[in-house]
Length: 49
Image (cartoon, rainbow, N blue to C red; front, side, top):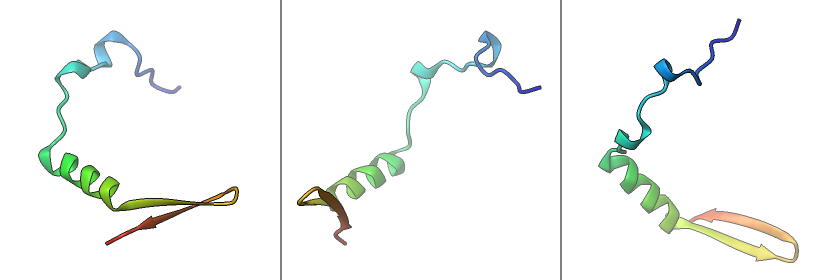
């Protein structure tokens, strides 16, 4: 049977979670390089390196 992860003893305190600085920098750099182009009813995503 599948384990239930919603039980109290298996839930970590989510207020204590902090991402690493590398993760934050990666996401910020990715969002800066991402460009979405709307053409008619289509969307094109381009990563600008």
